[in-house]
Amino acid sequence: MKDTSRKRTFATTLGLLFIGGSGLALSGLSNAAEDEGSTTQASEEEKKPGFTTDSFEILPELQLSAYYDDNIYATPRQEVSDYVGVFTPILKVKSLWEENSLNFDAGASLGRYADHSGENYNDAWVTMDGSFSVGDNTSLFGGAGYSHKHEPRGSLESDRLAAEPTVYNVTDLRLGMRQGYEALTLRVAGTYQALAYDNVERVDNLGTIYNGDRDRTVTGLGARASKRLDKSLSIYLQAFVNKRDYDDTVDVLGYDRDSKGYTASLGVTKKFGRNGKIDAYLGWLSQEYEDHRFDRVNTPNYAASLRWYPAKSYKLTASLNRTLGETTEVGSSGYLYTQFDTQLDKRISNNIVGYLNYGYGLVQYQDVNHDDVLNTVGLGLNYYMTKRILISGAYSYINNDSNIEFYEYTKNLLLVSLKAKF
Image (tube, rainbow, N blue to C red; front, side, top):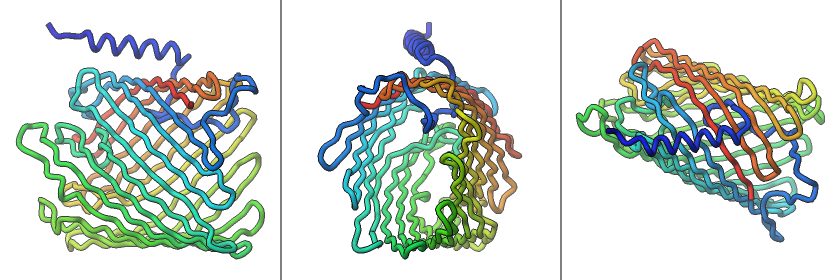
């Protein structure tokens, strides 16, 4: 007889967390943003989370999450469900200096499946960034980071034939300079990113998926000039050039995926009302590939973000973005991803915030007949027990509609989490 004790124990824990969470919340597996207007019932004497020294603020966090996923492999048929627990410790350090700044962020996200241990993951990251003043209205800024990640099932770049999630490492570096001239600000920055992927066994036991041909470096150089027209309105012009170099000259299918390109755009930032803000730009994106079988990508480039308080106790956020991603799909150079997300928060009481959200994504693989439409809807509830403790519950529904049946899937997610700041 199959041993179900571990699953029963996990399910019992999940049930207890639901009871303590005082309801459901939505946003998939992500944490709901803490509403700026939310407060708690904690007394004024309660200390602010974290610890301070003469120079730094130290902010430890711990999050325990449990969720149920009714389609863990994101497949169109023979769906498999499981319970998952996630342990997430985080440490943030922020400088308290008046002029310069230095910030540190390190953490891990450890996921454990009740019945399918092959899906377990151990993600971790460490980042550091800061700025240094070198004169009147002139400063240098930069940062570095390293992360160990996994590709979730159903993500845009995951291989559906992998027996386990693909693990990869990312190294990021950036350095720039900012110069201010009264209402005019100029920024110039260079970026470097290196990605390295592990090989993984095939689900059909027909060998190993070689991911070495996905290893690459991405370098870039960008500039931005912004002009403040008044206290609430600014306009800006920005441009960015990039070069994507793969470690292997060609991949296992014989494609040379090296490329170079640019984006250029004109944007506006406007503040309005009570902490309302809109930031939007429109421009052009172009990317040229070394392999002559890949067409050059030329398309409008745009993005927008909105923060609005339409009425007392309500907050609306929305974002629109278009990016060009890399892919290993046969015959495709990459994919254009147009993503729209919106969320409405409602402060129900001093320490309870509910929210609804919706996400839409259009994935257009280049040079091949493959398009996906991803819809996500959800709802959630955040209970701020104190300034230090947040209990959340969430539900979300995800549907990926593709013109290729192999990539279609739906899934339902139920989540509860406990977040503590020390």
